[in-house]
Length: 155
Image (cartoon, rainbow, N blue to C red; front, side):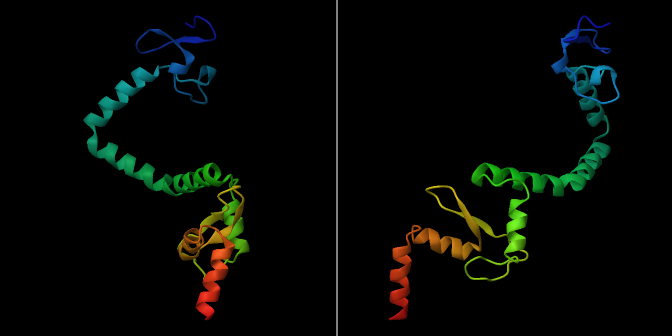
């Protein structure tokens, strides 16, 4: 029995609880499980304690199936939060640069290139290998220092 559209009675414990205390599940009435989260968690914990080998096997299988997707999602979220790069932009830039550093041109097929950006404005300039990116950082992003370094090396 439902009290109103914002609550539901758990089929296991019989308590009336707000809808946010029920897991989402398509195919169920109202799109939520008929058993509250607390009861589901108690049942699941008891099953894991009674079946540790199967629980470990299931966890490992889930991890193996989803690790690539999680890695891509974490990378995309990190690029978005750090540099404001929308999803897919890094891969597009990498392809446009031919998998090579924008400065030295050395291909980095297995090692990722880092996102180079202006610290003052946040504008993304391109993808660099770590040594080239570090060199720019050591020169404090000041072209006059780089020109002095070129003059020194040319002498």
